[in-house]
Image (cartoon, rainbow, N blue to C red; front, side, top):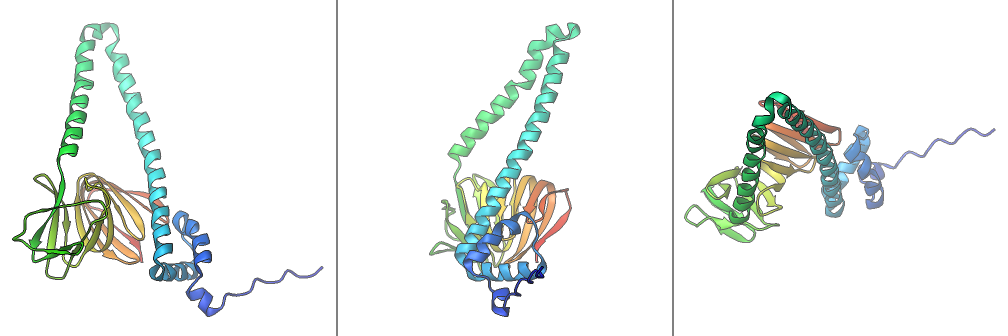
Length: 262
């Protein structure tokens, strides 16, 4: 029997810079699990120089984050349903028959009212950007502290330089602080989804932030994201958030820090 031939070693050029076809074939493995360091370095080098492959990688991250989020929300909904059924079972016991209507009013009506008020406020409030220090760029326009807050649309890029900072607001609430030397893209008018490129952001409320190396889902509270390129630092100042990257899904506790990529 003939001995199996060993696979040919890639040439230095191939190792350093994979083709688009080879890079896209490995994107799924990069999203789902970490590649060996040599492959990871070569693939990430290719993503830095190929906008099309990087765009496909980010889209794969979004899909992975969406699937993980739906699974988590499904589990949480099941747990809430079990707790609600247990409360209703206790409410229907002989001792509580008279208080059933009070339980229903206590559990259902406040939640319905909050839901309606949230929908009304989200439909009426428009996201805007304003300069906090110096000037910032909104597309091709330059704005400073003397300008009125500018409305934001999906696809707008907010860019600050080393001497400026900007705030993204919903009504009277400051939801996102774009610190000095930063770049971020608005992915929906309610600031629910942001695309972070570089610099540093302070994010408040319920937000999803996509970076080159992972997706951060802030469920509540406040966090700071800094870095850019193939690395990002996350500091959850308060509240709760979930981070999804090539290594899987991880929940951060208030006050915890985490490094993505790099």
